[in-house]
Image (cartoon, rainbow over the protein chains, first blue to last red):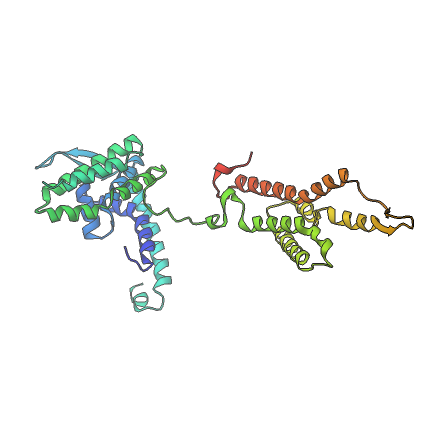
Length: 121
Length: 243
């Protein structure tokens, strides 16, 4: 919600990569919705309105990239757990390759001439 | 007793999501309800609940995201419209889809042509015809530089001279219809007319016809531009579609 013009660009970037961040967050372990939202939001600051992750999860499920199972919880009702499907793993692997190329291209351009650009490339 | 903020949030979400496909809506309500159950379980105080609701986002925002993910058009919420990346600038279109500059072009040509018969008063009162000619010429320039019409239509509008066909017609006829009144030696005045004059029964309708010609031509051109604008998808309200 930055009012300096950076807001919309960052929001679009975030929206573009969020599906793959969701896949990546599920790559190592299954998570239930509330937990997954917490990881993306608290740990990585990737969700501006957390509620919008649920429609994204539904879409990933419809596209066959994640699958869900119900599991009992020690307190309260059963929870819906999300895990990667094989198609989801392939999509994530493909994105990793794309992302490396994309990231280094943007780094070269945007960070050119800065200390960061010289040192961290 | 204060109303439960979580219940209020869910009620708003149910209302905002009414237009979503039933399956999508059921999923969304179930997911958000489960999320808020967790919030309720973890919350130590009411501030925690409010913070969690703030982070969740407005119900309308969440519904808009769901609509985006399912490819259904977003509900008419108070959200800003999504930025268009390319295409027609909506500012160019007015009611009916005809661009303002084309309306101005036709307006000037018609105005200039209709009052153009004032050319006849060029000697007596020069300002009026000069204004009409100026308007007419400006309109013609705008007309020919527009892409709204075919060359044939532009030619038609151009041939509607100031005063329509009336101007050359009247200029041709008037000098020949001269009447002179002389005093007859035997008494009363005698009027003798030389040359050709149109009888009023023919002349008046003809005058009306030739001066209304520019108005009719202008109307036809505007209608055609309007239809083409609709056909090519330039934004404009359809309620006023001609025909």
